[in-house]
Image (tube, rainbow, N blue to C red; front, side):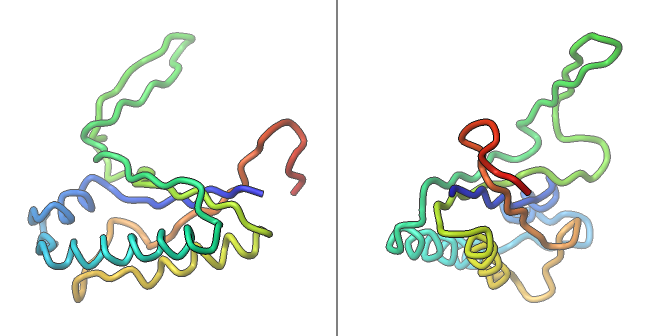
Length: 141
């Protein structure tokens, strides 16, 4: 079964990762960002070595996003970033493994991602793990 592990962030999170100070949050240094990328690269390499890696991508900052929603039967487009602090999917990894429990175990390893001392996010840290449906009726809860 394939599972998608979704990572979340906000525009402020993207700003601090690019080295910009954002309010009371200092920007990350190049070394701090490099440590995070090194961790993520090793995490992906371990998954590739175990045969569980399918795909992974980081997504561009919310400032580059558009939301299309239906209002009174008409599609309305809103450019990001959104006025309220809003988390968005920052990236994803797709794994193929034996069970939902194994996919959850893989995702939990992300809690060890390095970050600067005292770094905060706009929300509590979490990732979502969801099975991917290859067709109707594939996954029963």
